[in-house]
Image 1: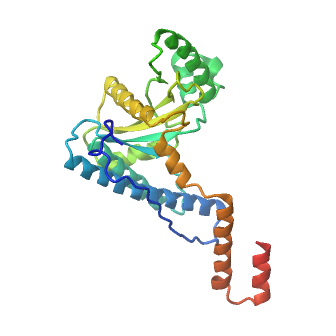
Image 2: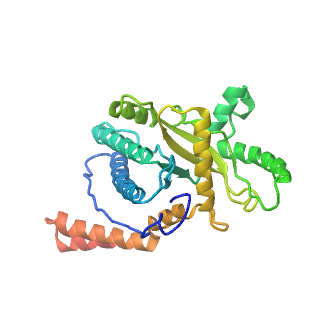
Image 3: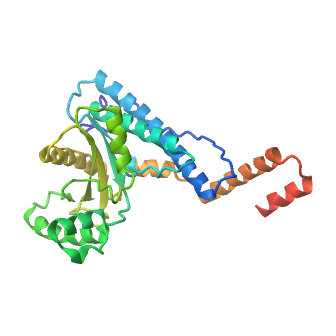
Length: 308
């Protein structure tokens, strides 16, 4: 999605959904099986992410777009969100992190910034930062969503009185780098980047808590935005990147939508309705019983299916 929207810059929009089936051994604890399944899902997501980056770079090469920020890719979720490694698939996890870093580097090198859009703010990463910096111990027990809601509302009241009626307002916190004590997987990303590219600055991920369209759509809840930034950049450059990307996010909040349209579409397409999930689950169980358990009689097969 580019800052200037025209037929030359958005070509052949399409929706592509692919289904992949995987099977896992049940000899392990169910917790480990779920973790590996989640990791495999994220590996597939990263493969499609890299394909998308490649396609956008081709469009940029064929057009006159040559800027520090040529486009942005919305990610429904955080930039740093892999499952923590398990001893049984630690190597697969490390490969995933390295491959994700390569995809992010390819995107940023082409002026395409991934935007991690977190719809639901949990934890107290920002509140802990404010409490430590300004020595305000009273807010340590307050979560980020509650704190920023109160803080932004006060700022909004002051700004809205100064702004013209025709202007909308975006309220956001000063971008801060992710805190590794809160985001446990963040050090894995930093380490993987240094292994892949040993010079030219680090890869850092910054975040900001945002109230989009505070004046026209004040009921839209606070969100957390994460953006990876490559190289040695100063505070002014980080702020400029965030300002440009926040404008992109605002433009995709069509009407009174609670989230940017690409995020809503991605979430809707990846959500399986309960009725469909029941049918799929029954088909899987039927296939398992008929193909994997061949040494039991028909009565037991029927019993298992009825019990399901």
